[in-house]
Each structure stands twice: as structure tokens, then as C-alpha cells.
Image (cartoon, rainbow, N blue to C red; front, side, top):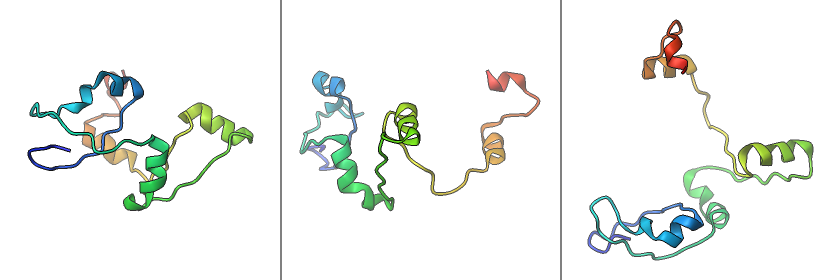
Length: 103
């Protein structure tokens, strides 16, 4: 929490980042106050409904589950809406004939 503005934010950091303490300063250089800590999976379980999502557990006991764990590191997500890749190419300025765009 920013002590001057009382703005709260959620920071998802690794244990190494937590040990260094670099996350305790915001963009303006103000030292932030830590008001709580929790494991990422616990935070997901407590807050997923806030974001209009569902939470599904996948076991690694099946071949599909083992592939999921190996491919995504155990945490994955699915998009709510389909992506129109042609529109994304237009947005980013990619041209189908431009070989440099794929490098």
C-alpha cells in the first residue's frame, strides 16, 4: 500500500524478488507498505471469482494432465473469447509477405 495515497495494489513476485525487497518502491520512488502476503495458489483460490473466472484443478496422474504440468508449469489459463489473428496482424503491422516480421 502506498502510505501517502493509500492506493492498494497486488504484486505477484518470486521468492527471490521478495528476498531482495526491490518491489517495495513504486514508480515515484515511494516506499510501499506490505499489508499482507500469501502463496500464489492460495491467492488464486481466494480471488478467482472477483475476476469472473472459474477455477479448475487438473491432476498430473493422467497423460493429458502430465503434459499440461510439463507445458505450463502447472498453471495455465484459457481465453474467454476467440482471437481474430488477422486483426492482430493488422494491429501490429505485420504483412504476410514480410519475412522480417517473423524474425
